[in-house]
Length: 468
Image 1 (cartoon, one colour):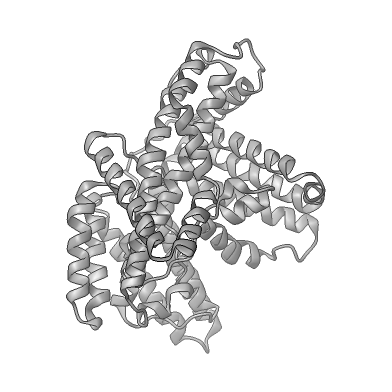
Image 2 (cartoon, helix red, strand yellow):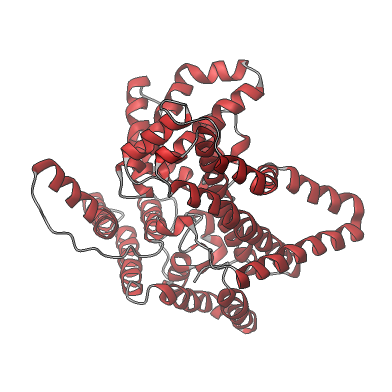
């Protein structure tokens, strides 16, 4: 079940909201837990037991760590055991086949692989479990004694299957002391509709451009067609994932929660470092807090800093998928971030903003080729084509037709990737008072109606980050 589906919009969400708001305060987290398990079981009826098992392991582990404050060796042993179990589940389901493939390739053997479907959201909820146990171990938070509250935190359906990754320390107090209000509910509805518009009206439509182009043999593409295709994917993945995050944040507000932002107009960045402070913010924060800083961060010289960055970005790439393309994608960013820390950042601060912005956007566009191709050679050949390293012509009829039929959509997507629309809405609300509220409501209703019409008439409605 995805947020941008009719069954979620007209059945699951209304039923959940009604039950939630008519229940007494003491049962609200139980409602969230039960409905979240139903939400997850809708798509993963078997793997729900894996999730429940993981919750029990970390719940008990957190209590045991706290109960052994005076015995550091035992406390550390419990912490390591829980972390190993969490990572073992993730490794088995996500990386087992990747490991066997590489063993077969390196040693020339033919070990058999049993293909297992990847449990939805396992990368996201595993990181939340790890952050909880790590925070308890480091004394940042007190172990949660109410298993209903802990289960609600892990399974909370708004951010269960594709984030944002909510660290326990950010939501600990809200589990018991949150407040619902008409204003917050209205903000949540507005945020949800905006996210759905991003996903359904922009990401779905612009994604079909990339789908049609990447499926063709590379020798049949022109240079311009290659650029159009990967620019379309660059826009698709932003509106797909940021749209989901907006919907998740909006749903959280409807239930009284305040989730941290996950995107901040990343394509406005003027460096790769800035891009990753704006893109998938919750993931970047997680790797900073639980890997980069514990490794020593940038406190031990440039060589150690470079090592730490490579470890973090290797892990970041691998987190996204069991493929060397993802690893290269992660290391690619790690190298540029190190170069910016070493000397490139000073240069970028001196050049005109337009040049720094172009540098960032081009490097990010190139990175998405590795991200959405299955083999390293395929990615390299596509990048060579983009920069004219071959016999492909600059422009063909496909490029002309694609631009002619999709130029308005691409322009709208580019505009919507900037803060312009957000600032316009804020301006209308501020300067037109009650009339402005009506204008914004009308805009949201239009987006909602158009999104529903699209969902009724179209079948192309993937969420790209569900596969991670």
